[in-house]
Amino acid sequence: MALAVRGEDGEWVRVSYRELKARILSTTEWMLANIPRVRAVMILAENAVDTAIVNFACYCAGVIHTPVSPSFALPGDYARFRHVARLTEPAGIFASGTKAFAEAIETVLGDDVKILTTDAQHFSRPVSLISDVYKIAPTPAVEASISAVDPEAVSTYMMTSGSTGLPKVVTLSLNALPANSAQTYAAVGKASVWDDVMMDCLPWHHAAGLSVLRHSMVCGGSLYIDASSRFLIN
Image (cartoon, rainbow, N blue to C red; front, top):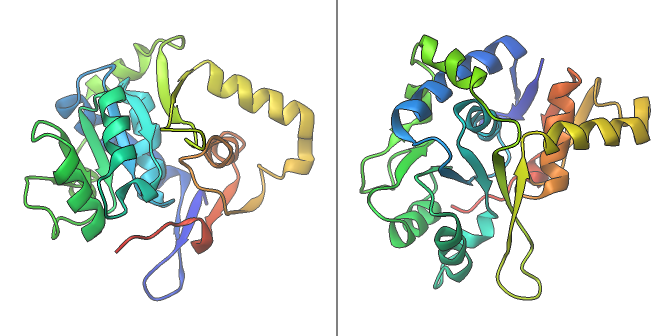
């Protein structure tokens, strides 16, 4: 088992590595058809299985994974959301289907930005549902895209906290991600239990939280997504 999250009934919904891979490849196929290579895809979503899948699909599609804090979608002038959008110029966004997220996206982002979401009910624009994307059959273009990935290219835009002003963009290459994992594992070793069962309680729009997701998947562990790490805005 790769990932697990509480369902609406309170029971754990578990996703195997086989299921995870299939959904990542299908999402990669959607990205290849909708997002130009080396453009940014913003992530405005709490920790969830879908969020993890979009994360890894960005790497496979050669687009720039750009997670932002869900707090950027709090009602107001969306100053931080606008600022990050200006800096990264996203071609697409993945968002949880909450009303607040939909309002923020439609206020800040242009009509040319492709929207991928878990629920379409609060959007007035055309969107793609992640549940429909999972039904797409991957073509050989997906394998070709993975083979063409440049490990020195920018893979991720991470945002600083903005505690001394507006957030700044930190660029990370694909090479930087496994290097961080290897260095951390060398320092912590088996005490990390990344190859075992872990409870996730750090947000993935922060570097530390995202590293836990990455380390766990690389080491073949099972990561349970705790509700306290999910910043829900309804």
